[in-house]
Length: 384
Image 1 (cartoon, rainbow, N blue to C red):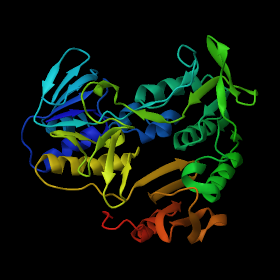
Image 2: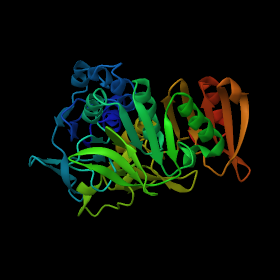
Image 3: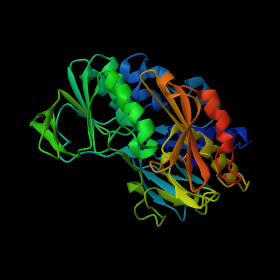
Image 4: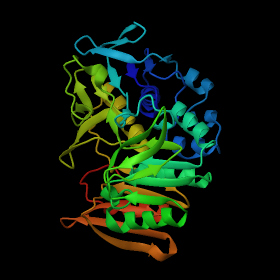
């Protein structure tokens, strides 16, 4: 078995293979030199300095050794011969296997002119988080370009570190396209109460500065002054190395219901775009829970089972004192009803409905109640 990608999805696949009794050779190729680590803490605990980097590791060296897998780290894959299931790495290694699992994740999008301008950061890797923290400790003003989950988390963390933080982006409120006006409005209020300045509803035209960033230029011409800028405008699947492979690539590696892209080729995690047979839609989910759950299904199918991947999607975000947990697929146009708790008390569960069915439930500091409401989501046959 050959797993290309050494983060949560790749490691989860290896562990699932071993749990299910696979005793053959397993090789894991990773682009980064670090042992597998968790990404959610990078925008929170690691960035804030509450965790040492080692604490973000998914497993200790001893546990990894116990898997009996060969880890080839710091050597990214650059090509795949899908017919012969052979991967070539940047260092010139040629690795073949009976089954190849693509778990290469995503890469952050950047702004024009960002490269080569000091003080401008993205946040995807452990090294990104440490570099951003080092810059923030010397800074006073941060502008976060991006009003999605990552941008909102970084803004909350930096604000708690004592910086003057401005969040800029095109949405009317943080995460509005995911949560809709009610919950995103509450999230905006939460950020404002903690001192984050929101400059939302206007696009970002570019960056200001020569050699080092001095500000962010909005589409209306205003320049937001900044000592440091974080660009959090989404990410693209890491599929460039698959060029010429003949595999279907369209906003991810396209797979069937079994997460299979071709005979003996599977995808898992952020890079996988697969058909959810209950929803009748092709999905690509960028979250930690999906990486683990999908890895288990991929491992099962590699070993001869026939399992469709039919999850109820789930993700969470921590911002200031709010932990928000989402089951299902909310949308900004859904009808939202508070079904547990009270908005004014800072603890509630919101139910999302569209076309007469429940599509999602969202818990704001009510994890148990939200989990119980998960059963109401109308995904026929979906694993719950």
